[in-house]
Length: 461
View 1 (cartoon, rainbow, N blue to C red):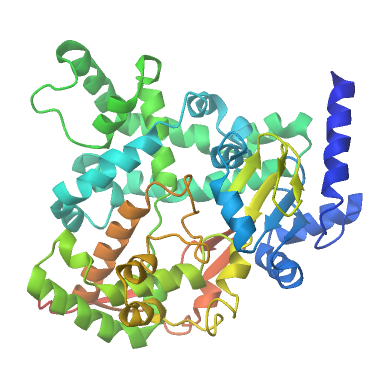
View 2 (tube, rainbow, N blue to C red):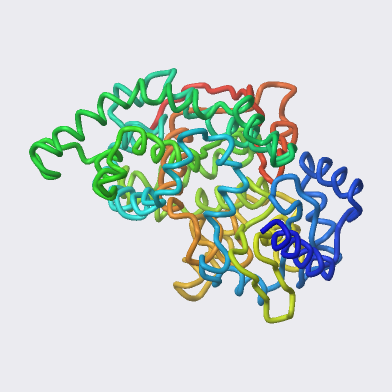
């Protein structure tokens, strides 16, 4: 068996050597390049994109099991990457490797192997609830989970802090574990991961409620009178018999929370956009009220959100997949089984042939395009929640982010309320937004402790 594994690894290495490298590909040099790239991945991707645009290149990476990340670009390769089936190129398996969940999630890792049914909850329960519960979103916009978890839990400051820290803790722990050889990963994961502790805290908040819900479902079936229409119920409806445990449901809750990100730092740093955005919101709400329908008429706000996502992208790569078997693109680029392959989203989002003046922030870039469009497709294509080959924030294709419509609704609602109720700015001396964020691996974060100043104003709607 060991001989077979060695042969497979050698074969994969031979195929990878045919793909050009950005940085060093010697044993020591590749490790040093990978370590440096962990804190500046966008530079390596930009360099590779400029040199190998339209084809593939690879960079050393401490964030993937193979030690390499193959990065592709060009319309044809992007199409083939996004259309590949999970049996060939799998996004979920990439995330498991990327997050080192085998080592950082402890006993909770087993729930991820029982099937990602929580993604169906996002696609169905969450998305359907946008209309029925939009009033709840408006009332509880300060906390994205307040539409899903009972108010007494969702408003608890410690519960909110638990949600806020979860994403950063997972990624930091994963980055550290990636640096260790396989034999030491279990020990490293146990030492640095905060996931088991976070899940234990979550059980203190949600465990009794879920156990009670399970008991009532057992006694009365899943349609008993007064059964809450919330995320817990949606998860229980999708779970099979083996998955109907408090710990499994809690794991799904945190998996959904991991993807929920809302920030207003760009708005605070771009004072010139406050008034035109505020005028749009006030005009729309005066005509349509605070409703789901009104959001579709806030084209400038939607454009501002999309430009923020493009300019301050949350990750430097997109359409991230793991090869479940050998995969060959039509241009002959071969991806060996087990190797990670991604799209060069940072290069694409900052390509002057795709976006005019891409290194300048233009908050109304997409609303201007939509206003000049002649077809309905022009309007749909340039929405914040609409992935396309040149906008990969929400992935692209069949495996694209299932929660993008929920995220768009929550973010737009929150920003609209903030605009009409508050003046906001960054503290004096901190008005450079580039100083408010940091790169960690391929992910881009607002720095912990970033502050904004709010001043209440007289709302007119």
